[in-house]
Length: 346
Image (cartoon, rainbow, N blue to C red):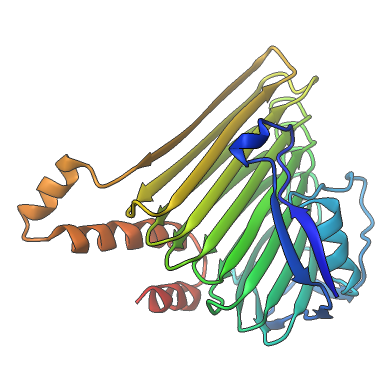
């Protein structure tokens, strides 16, 4: 059954002629549950089926929109990964999803108070539609690192959402690497509810061929002295299109909070279409926030530097493109996954 829906709605509408308010798609949402395969399970992790967790934290919000999130979540029974103690051997939980048909993956990561946990999710496949929703509940003092690596075939349309809520002094670090797929809608929504909670993101991507990448990143500050740092870095080439929405929402009561977002695009084709909307919303006086977005090609200084080392422009552009991905991949706590990313690039 095909549905036409809006995805990645911007939190506050802007001018319609900018075509930034949302992405509109038509997909067959006859999707089946695909929980993926757990290929590495550290100690202190309990796996259960379901969609609800016992916590005093509020429900996290979705960046892709309620309609799209419901279509994906309703097609799955849900899997809950509860971290009950800190993993002493530092091994991450690794989940691999291979989508060979229209699939829905709904995972919940519940980090109990004081725990430290690492999770890696790798997506591959040749399905027409791969829908992914991931929720993170980080309770008081918990530290969560989540890495999502998308290495799908060029025929895949993907919808990927990460919804986060942080308690007092909790910290969530999120790494997202987008390399494959045809039409990709990816984003996250983080609510910094607790005192001195923190959210850090590092997104890296390459758009090539005729790919379309649509990103919606939102961090809402409600707790006092909260902090976020959002970094997005990628390359756009050929006949591709990329849209970026990044919003830091400083709400009343979040006094002493800080935020920073920076989006950088290396543009390597005159045919490519790039749109960006970095936004800061201020409902509180005692805050500090910065944002920015840059779009540009290889600088004359960098090209001169490369040429003096007998590196031509095409090779220089390829090196810088891969460097952006390698820098983000270096923070993924598993060498085998890092190698997969490099193999995909090569």
